[in-house]
Length: 293
Image 1 (cartoon, rainbow, N blue to C red):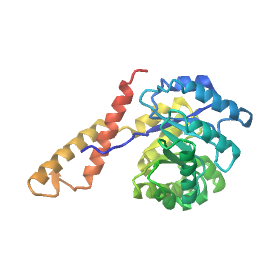
Image 2: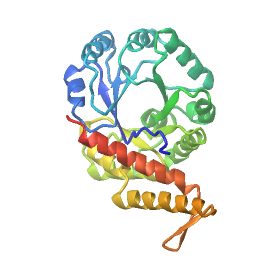
Image 3: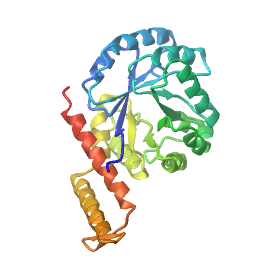
Image 4: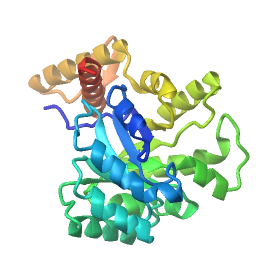
């Protein structure tokens, strides 16, 4: 049986107050589009951003891309105003920024539901030292949480880190959030790479995120989509290996064995989960690629 899995190799931030960017996003190969009402929208444009986004989402067809809205913090009037609008929009999920506790998650969901968004999934930003330290309780707080997205820029600033390509100062924090997400079977996505002109550094950042265990990475400019998608797309050899594993484990079970052997390598039952995930991502990538743009 195929597990339900939502590919989020790339989550593209789009400023909600710029209509042409929203329209362009309809034709981009992003697994998720985050219509941003928060950091990328100037204070003077906040109210207009809600109007612009609402108008453009009257046509809510963004192909196979997931539609997410990031609102301002609910502890502010801006966030409360955002929620009243976006809860009514035809989107898949609401992203809550700078979440730092389980109580905050529960409060956000309660207010979302009261605003009429009971059908919306929830994505949380972890972007502070306190959020990292409480990542486990945040991940455990609600089954409505679909994903955790790292806000690495704010986190690095608050940790007083020097910017290095290997992000050595962030590794502990990233790993703690990944552990929390995996313990509760939640998708976890890395923060964006900010240097748009350094292609080598961008590719390195994507592959580092993949190898650390992230499901994907957020993107701040469409030029980065190619690198993100490539890094998190299963290779053909991995897909073929996954199919072999499923067949081998199925045959082993029919023969009363719990393990299988492929090319002299012992295949344990836990690899069944890995194989299903690889095939699932591959199938979703094909759907995204085949979707008319």
